[in-house]
Amino acid sequence: MTDFSCDYSSARPAGHPLADLSNKLIARVQARRARRQLRALTELDDLALRDIGLTHHDVTRALNSPLSTDAQAELYRIAHLNSTARM
Image (cartoon, rainbow, N blue to C red; front, side, top):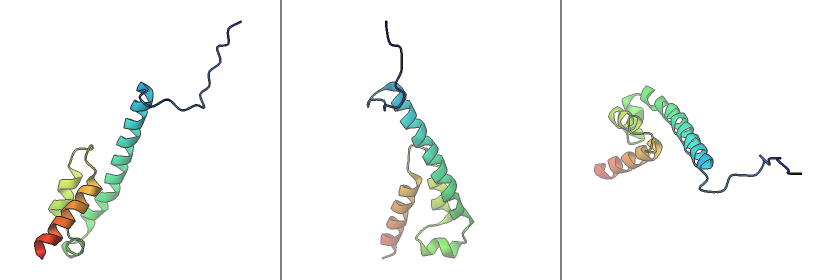
């Protein structure tokens, strides 16, 4: 007799189409969640943003970048560039 049981507990091997799709979906959800948290920066006043090396334009530009771009990393990069430009 043939055994048709399935083992759903094992992870999908790397490169499996469903695993790839699942990983992309998880990354998209995490990126959207991170952007939602970064939107709190838009509520800060100009002085508070200047203290961390950003402007409202910088925050808006990072939040409007494609989801494939890490908005938080982009803001770190912009803040670093702004701080070196002031020296």
